[in-house]
Amino acid sequence: MDSSLKVSRLLGFHYLLIIFAILTGAGVDGHSWVDDLTCASGPFFTSSPAKGYIRNYVGRQSTQIDELTTFRILDLSSNQPVCPPGRTSPGQSDEFPKLKATPGDLIKASYLENGHIWQTLAGINGPDAKPGTIYWYGTQNAKSDRDIASVLEWTADGKGGDGEGFLLAATPFDDRVCIETGHEDAEEGRVGGPCSSYFRLPETAEVGKDFTVYWLWDYTEHFGPPKPGFIEWYSSCLDITVVSKEDALKEVKKARRDTELLAAESTPVKGLNRHVRRLQIYNERRKETGEKKSSWFSW
Image 1: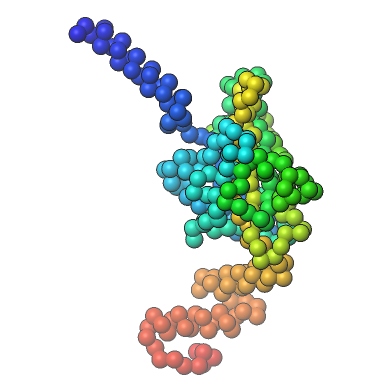
Image 2: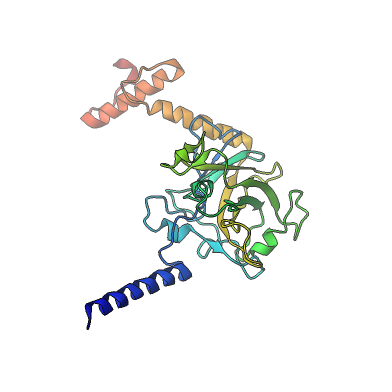
């Protein structure tokens, strides 16, 4: 076979592979989802707040995170589940637990823009491209068969649709600060790192019962106004454990106390915890050396 014919056939085959990948979405990554949540107000809002995660989160270290976490929605009808397969019901790993919050707390969510902002700023997606809008919806009547059409009918006053949920917030995908690391020069004032979006847990949230939240990102106009009938949304589903402010304060106080007691042995022993810390150090030494128990105040 002529060598030029071989090359042309090979290139044709490669083009077919590329077209197939585009049409099927194979090998396409870089979409976005909620990576973690923290309390931005309330008892759990500290200098280093505990993080919570979406259902069955696998972590950024996973090579399959894009495949397992991206959930693309092209149909807003009642036939379309709002949560991805395997995440229609609550589920967490010990490594990535649910967030804890109290009624009325402001919740901060972090996500990466993955090029959806800097490429828009650079004009790569066209002059009318938009990175989209994030809608936060919540309910304490979670259902495994919940569809996106029913969720989108909910309103801020809780009276919309079936009345089982609320529109908690609507925010731009672009928080006007974040940018993908390495593209900070896309616009003055941009800071490389995660983007942020906020919503508030209702004051009426029932303590002792999980509050389910749906993160819905409308990405339909990423190339500008689409053809009639075309839509493109993405979702993340998560659950928040609602606790009372009293219990939250106790938990935070205990965590701080435990942190102080677990300080390095070289840390100066001060305040009311000095005797407790001395006892802890003594017991640690006795366990290491196999010494018999004696009065802690005798050393």
